[in-house]
Length: 473
Image (cartoon, helix red, strand yellow):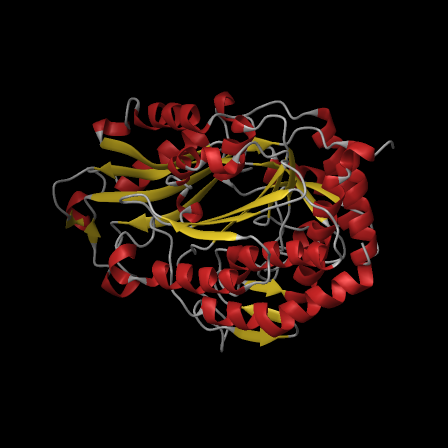
């Protein structure tokens, strides 16, 4: 592939079409159904689907079939089929649903306010993961412009990923005959350790999430009258959380939430720590004087990729400060997010967490853990020699340094589904969520120059996949 010609075409496509499309896409508050149960009534999801679908249909890709597939009561899926020069299949995946607004956006920025600054496009969903459909088709077009052969390509853009992809299995089954059996899966919904080279995700954590509630009274009571006799519902929850987590170190305690870390992943983590150094934690917006967990960067990375970790992401039953009277509250609820090691079963972990939290409640309080999101992680198969060679060449040509392999702390439920469905497939899981890009949080941005080069790397892999049987390295 003519690297310079491909990059020039891709740069022009990004600058002339993709960035303006993403600007309009960011304006649409198409929150995932978990955060907008009335998504169908509000119509924002449909607006995003129609915008991306309209752009896809206009692209100069001979023989492409484009369809919005709808199953009753489920979020829609954009499904694209591009004929190739063989019966082999490449599956390219992305999503278009978004996380909620979140607070803390900088002045002049906002979740639905697209802003371009220093070649970064700020706003919710551009990097996670609105760019995926545009980049996927642009990479395919770059290969076709040079009249290079490639496999048949199938592109799936779902609208439920941020809610755990609970609709997607039904579409995979519904479309199974049209999808076929891919030998390569390309997913553009992951992260990067820096913006200087290509990063391949080789593991993803799972999740066990839900609401933990403790009730101690039928109604609130004056704290001067009740405190010392009635235990605080907050203290009850604090005791229950101690069953899961050591509050001094953050280490998750139950053995069923841990797993053995493969030796290859340990070695890859050491290389990543060596390459990034203290950037491993300097990328986070710590307040002054605050420091990271763990004593070294290898453990910090393992904590983020192969060890369980608990976060409290929401609280209910607690009034705002200005409305907080001297009342011992009747209940407290916490939203828990337990990130799981890649090889721990999400459903089983959730079941055992519920048992751990609800057993023998302190003081006889009424305690309930109600799960609302369970997902298995994913551990990639060994990277085939042809794919490593292709990734290395693509990274060096686009960025300079070679490819780097990394574990990712987030969850992409689709990868576990595909890993089970297509055990012989190779996976190129990558993305643009590098340092400070802050997906799900305030000030999310897409690093446009990095994304342009990543698109060229995808084109290189699509081209090399067709010729992989010739590889003799």
